[in-house]
Image (cartoon, rainbow, N blue to C red; front, side, top):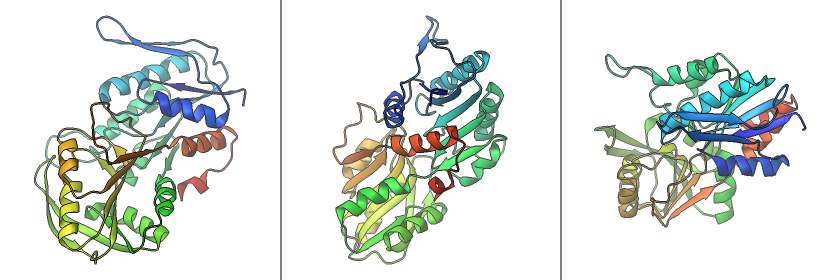
Length: 311
């Protein structure tokens, strides 16, 4: 492991430190600061020549600053003769801009993929992409990990009975089906109509949730509009306790107010994105993805198969 080095930007320093503790290696020494005019400044403070380097950085809010930090760190490592550079993005920002859904708009997810590759990244590790097809945007190897095992362990420890797994929209059916199989639970889907980028209206529930303990599963919770509306509709259809298992806690705009007023008993998320100190919602639980990422890094460094982590 003497050839393995892990660095971190300012987005996920806690996750990076936990990964290092799991692997028994020190966190790489670097400085990621700002010049007075707010330009990003990066300096690698140790020798990385010939080393297998992993850079941990989510492109979450502030997305542009975190993305630039990552790109500049990759460039600095490339110019320092690192043997291989793997970008570890627990959360891949701009993932929702993955297609032209109206005239004269960009496909920003593809642009970001190109930037990461052009900067010098040799490989990507990420968790729960917004759409699996995003893997095809990269011309370098991408390892797409899933947080399902983390949530499975947490909820099975609660020993809930009569569970129904619910997808808050039609697009999440595949994810919800995987959860339902793990929990040996029934499956339901919320049919919704999106009014705007912050509001959604539930049309009806497809599936039986009456007298069930419901777990809503999704990849991202941003303004929590869909989540709150879905929870309200589920309650009206006779659901008992309603939990939400969401991988990436973007939590912006009116999310806090909506969650406080919602029927959700507990919001369970991961630490792919650090929760802001300004976010005050006492029914949120944050689980760590460090062990999952550490195992992926260990296997990649040792040139071992990581297919078991994709299940």
